[in-house]
Length: 102
Figure 1 (cartoon, one colour):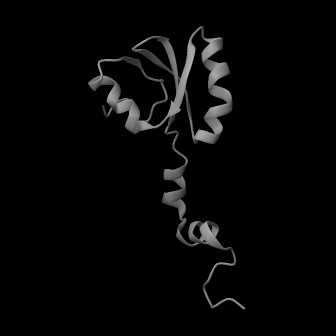
Figure 2 (tube, rainbow, N blue to C red):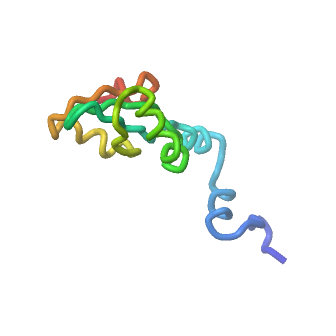
C-alpha cells in the first residue's frame, strides 16, 4: 500500500502528477521549439513553432524543403537569442511567444 497522499505513479510520472496544476500545465503548453530553416549561411528563418523536439524533428526538414529552404535544426529559445550576437539574419515565426520580448 502507498502512504496517504502519495501518487500511484512512479518516477518522473509521480513528480509530474504531484506538481502539475492548472497554471503549470498552461506554461508547459507553450510552443518553445523553433524549426530553423536556412536560405544561405547566416540567413535563417523560422519554419514553424512546436511544443517539443520530438514533435519538431520529424516534421521540420520536410517543412523547410516545402518552403524552398534547407533544413538547419530544431532548437530552443537559448540558441535563437544568439543569432543577433552572431550577426545572423533571423526571421521569426508569427506565433513566436517571445517575438515582442527580444
